[in-house]
Structure formats: C-alpha cells, structure tokens
Length: 398
Image (cartoon, rainbow, N blue to C red; front, side, top):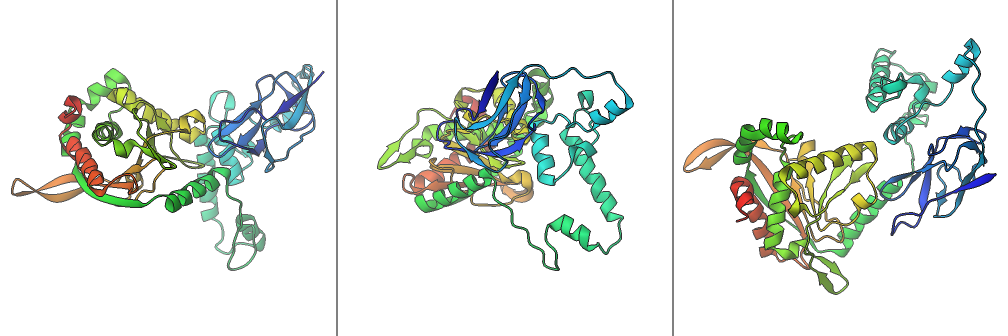
C-alpha cells in the first residue's frame, strides 16, 4: 500500500514554503518518523517525517520549489526494507557511502559551505557529526589553503567563486528568511514615523550585584546571572509606567496590551530572529535567564518553533555582543518601540564631583512618533536608566 506524503499544515499567516533539502532519494528505505525533507518558511525550517516504514517513491517537488499546504511531496510504499547482509569488506565499503545522520543546524551549515558530510569525522554519539566537527573541518581546510602556493589555478578559482576572472561576482538567491527580514524592515521604514532617543547607563551597581551573587545564583538555579534579565525586568517596569510604548497601531486604532511579551533579537546561522519571552512580568530572574539561554541555543540549532517567533509587544536588541558602540535600531512591526543595548566601555565619569572610571553603556530607544510622544520616549528611557543604576528599584517596583 502506498501512502502519500504531503506538505503539512503551515503556521498561520504563512502562505507557502520552499523545499530546502531532500534527505532521501527515490528507492531509499525509510523508517517511521525519519526526516525526509526540510521545508523553509519565512521564519522557521519544518521537517517532514516519514509516516511509515517503507520505500520512498518519486519526488514531486525539487529543492528550491515553492509548495503549499497539502501539496504532494512524495509517497511511501509500506513494508520493511530488506534486512542488511552480514558484514563483509564490500558491505563495509557500501555502508561508508551512506549519508550520515545530521541535525538540521549541521545540514544547513554543510549545505551553506558546500561540504560533503562524508568527508567529516563525527565525534558525537555513534559517530554523529556535530557543529564543532564541521567548524574544525573548515579550519583544517583553511589551514591547508594557507599553505598552498600563492598563485591559484584557474580551476581552483572557479571552484571558490563560481565565476572566472579578475573581478569575480556571484549571484545567489535570498533565503526566505532574509527576504522576509528585508520586507519587514522596508515595511517599518515606510509605515512608521521612526525617531530615536539616546541615553547612557552606569552599570557599576549591576556589576557589583553580579559579582556578589553570580556563584550562588548559578549554583541554585543552574544558569548564569547575565545582564539581559536586568534589562528585561527594567523594560517591563518602564512599560507599565508608559503603556503607549507597549501598544501598537491597527489601522486607525491603538491597541494597548495588558501583557508584556518581550522579543529578544538573536543572531542565528540563517539570520536575525526574534523569539518572544511571553508574560515576562511574571518570570523570575532565573526563569528569564534560562529562557534567554534556551532561545540562543534554539536559534543556533534552527529549532525555534513558529509560535516562539510570533507576536511580541516590545523588543530588545543587543548589538553590544558584536561590539556596537551606538546604533539606531529599527522597529519590529507592528510594535511601536525597540530598545538597543550596546557594548560596555570603561569611561571617566564625574561622580559626586570626582572623576571615576565606570562601566558605561549607551542605550537607544527607537519609537513610532505617531503613537509615542518625544516626552514619553525620553522618560521611558530615563526610567530604564534609573532602574539599572539602582537595581533595588526592580525588587521594590518603584
């Protein structure tokens, strides 16, 4: 009996998907729940598992094709695959040609770098290839390249750039995520009156607090006490005082949100993603730090769900992790404001009439001037500054 494998129901507001990678070929034996193909949407990569054990039929949509929910992908002829024969030298050679099992993150990385996974030695369980294995393999290639003759042959030049000549160019299509990011950024610029206000914050008090309690905090909660939880907590308290910053525009209406779903901008191999920390006002510092840590891991592995990337009433972006000193973050529609964090620098400051070296950070708040007045934006940012410079305010909510 043959069973059709179709495109699963796509998340709300996602019209179609793109075939990213087929992991099986027609005629291959497949096991129930084994991943057959990756589908790329605007935000996440979806895996399509085999519904039964059997043999995979012909492919109905090739890599790069656009498909919609319900479209036929392939079929599975029910039945177990032939049992493998006893190991022989020939059988061992054949087994070595089989595709290794890869995680989605590793699959995307080897595809992006144009690497044959069979060339990589896996150090994970049962020889599974880890992301660190791919990185080590790339580093070994770079080391070998650096020792090669300075004058590359024409063939090697074509292999590296895809185009022959002294001024090479390469045209590649945008990924769906990159195209969606471009679309949303352009939408924000065209549909909102964006202004940015700046301030700076002295993080000495938070540094002292973290120094005194970081070891006990990590021992008790099994997570490090970072800076992000302080910024999230300070932002939530400021949002409570200035509801317009937590609101959004829908047509000619303003929607004031009575909850605090904070978007945390995270870099991933596929581009910038913004997972949502829901009901951030109800989370403890430890719960907040664990959620932020998990978002980072999932973004790196490509395992964030569509639900984790949907919604949000306010966003925090930390360009400081990349060394940014100052920037003007752009809104994440339909939100009305975004807080930009930057790198911490030791700078001379006048404290009580004396010059002292303090850990300082520039803060930036970009906001939609259609709904947020300049006075509100400035006071909102000052509120965050005051709470960070005196963290006891976060405990007392004053």
